[in-house]
Amino acid sequence: IQWEKQIRNSARIRRPGGMSVLVTGAAGFVGSHVSLALKKRGDGVVGLDNFNNYYDPSLKKARQSLLNSHGILVVEADLNNAGLLAKLFDVLAFTHVLHLAAQAGVRYAMENPNSYVHSNIAGLVALLEICKSADPQPAIVWASSSSVYGLNEKAPFSESDRTDRPASLYAATKKAGEEIAHTYNHIYGLSITGLRFFTVYGPWGRPDMAYFSFTRNILQGKTITIYRGKNGADLARDFTYIDDIVRGCLGSLDTSGESTGSGGKKWGPAPYRNFNLGNTSPVKVPTLVNILEKHLKVKAKRKIVEMPGNGDVPFTHANISLAQREFGYKPTTNLQTRLKKFVRWYLSYYGYTRKDIQ
Ligand code: NAD
Image 1 (cartoon, helix red, strand yellow):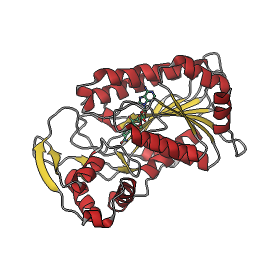
Image 2 (image 1 turned 180 degrees about the vertical axis):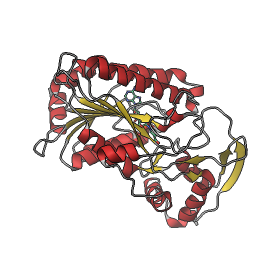
Image 3 (image 1 turned 90 degrees about the horizontal axis):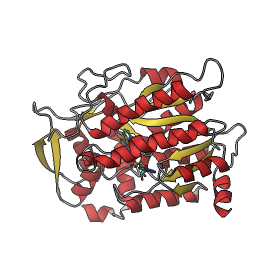
């Protein structure tokens, strides 16, 4: 009963007509930011996360504490815990689900393939099964990834481009997720939208990502390894600031249609669609390091090696016109200025003083 009360309090809707949102992966990087943004504008939020140890769980716990301090409960559970998910939906009629929980990372997949199947395939199906049976059915927005474009050579990437050459098992499970979501949409009338995020960075980020681990290693005086393509070209990423991604998630949630159920309205919900959420201006990885050096005021020790060919793609570059047209998505930031916000957060979170790093 205490548990139910906490959930109800966490999702209490403050503004008239506000949403009641279940955010999966709420203790994650993107999930924690979007949960706070939803709460701030008066929507009800309940988080769910299994706090796995893919990266430092204490960072996830710190994000959870931050969410708690804003009145957001994060339930500790796995997506595959069908009993608990069903119970959550019994307690609260969620109007929306923002599904961000996943096994991320492209290189980890080499050694841990089952983790991707467990979270990104089985976990997604478990969640959609519950949504399918929920009354009312929530509208679902979920995180796919730019990695579905794989070895696509045509840039920028548009949603209609080929996605049949994934470069990692991670990418393959995201691509499979898009097909699964599409199927639940047209068979069961679930309203589902997929968002293909492009390399997201910012405060409270993910320690396994390059900008984060470069920062850690530069500060510790360690050599950083920079990959370049087999043809000698630098890798480039369409780095996208977390605040832009948050705005994209909110825009997508706001415009996502009602689910109608298989026996629902004649025309069903809008057909399943994927939208790119990127920045549209790729930056080469060595340039990312230059920017970090400038903000950290420390020179990096660089080692440049050929990309090992186990998951990384040479470049990513988003065409965002579809998301712009459908829900006004417009990134407003660039890496030069916004990486500073990450650096400031990093130094403060890990207790550095300027003296330490000069
Ligand atoms: P993250 O790893 O920080 O967050 C994901 C969270 O999901 C983690 O806290 C993890 O504990 C939780 N989780 C994983 N498996 C779970 C399970 N089976 N049950 C319950 N919880 C589980 O990652 P993120 O960077 O915040 O990414 C959020 C989403 O966006 C993911 O789906 C990711 O694949 C996608 N994405 C991220 C990026 C990026 O650059 N950050 C790029 C493309 C796509």
